[in-house]
Length: 302
Ligand code: NCD
Image 1 (spheres, rainbow, N blue to C red):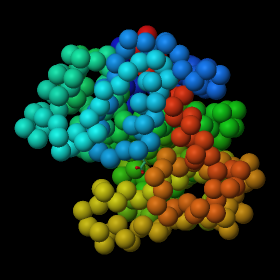
Image 2: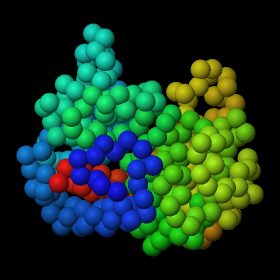
Image 3: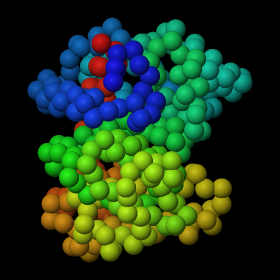
């Protein structure tokens, strides 16, 4: 795939070669961070950070990435309440206007399709930082990078995805990116929160509600929270909130060289007693995310 000048909106854009190319650049970025902290590779470039939905990691991660590349960032921390959308400006127009000022836009929106509307208007590349219950391609990229780094490969692994696979945009992006590799998928969710068929049909997957029965087969245990904000009904959410809890006791059944991923924020699905387990990689993922986003910004902008 071509990165330069492109919108990055869906995981469908990536192929195996472009993923491996991106991961090599991300590894270079990691050594730059470790050695000097900052470069001037994107000096003079400006990124707008447009988040119409809460975020801690993803926004900080993109903004840190841009700073470490020597570029600048403009943002409004409260787009929902204080942007021109309150004056009924369309997302298309917001994209058009902001793109006259900056070189790249990173956008998150509460509705599936919101980021695409911003991109439709924009004259500069737009990177999807989370599109309602749709996709979150850069989280998927950093998840795969973490697996590649930790396991040395993506082929030949059994990847378990556990939790809210219906509303979780991270599993949607992860599955599509992993579909380029020889991966066995084990999809664990309550029946009502199954992976949508548009994604599960892309791969051969074992689907089950029983985490404990399958945890021992997984090389990668990819946990996600039940996406409370996507439920209309609090009672319905409460039914599933505690469906899967990974704790130190359950980790005894996992492979000795398995890795545990989580995009965070976590609620109860990973107990804090797992944090000290050397197989827990969810805080490493956060670090890796900056390097991956640096690599992506670099490829899109230069
Ligand atoms: C995820 C997201 O926003 O989709 N978080 C993140 O970007 N690190 C996962 C989630 O909110 O559950």
